[in-house]
Length: 124
Image (cartoon, rainbow, N blue to C red; front, side, top):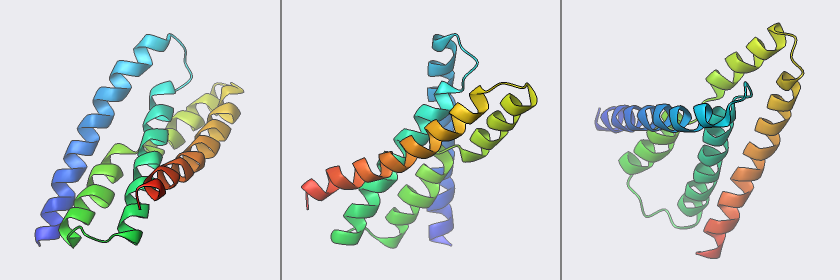
């Protein structure tokens, strides 16, 4: 039951952080391309890559802390559900930005996991 609470608190914080970051980034771009969601996805992937690498090589965190960080905080922060919805909306509008959105999110997110793991590996 304790882990559930940690996941819930982390999810709340991650969702609020996502809301604030997207709200800050998206209006500043002036374009319909979902830059805020892309930024959140890439940042979340870099973070989960780094945390995962550290947990695999130096598992010093409690299961509750791991659940808080990975499932809660980052699960609430990353936005692949929003990504799917925004991409579908772009397709429905007949915009080729939908394809660019898919490619950018997939390539940069997977690259972000690699970058996060690489950075974390430097410290292990």
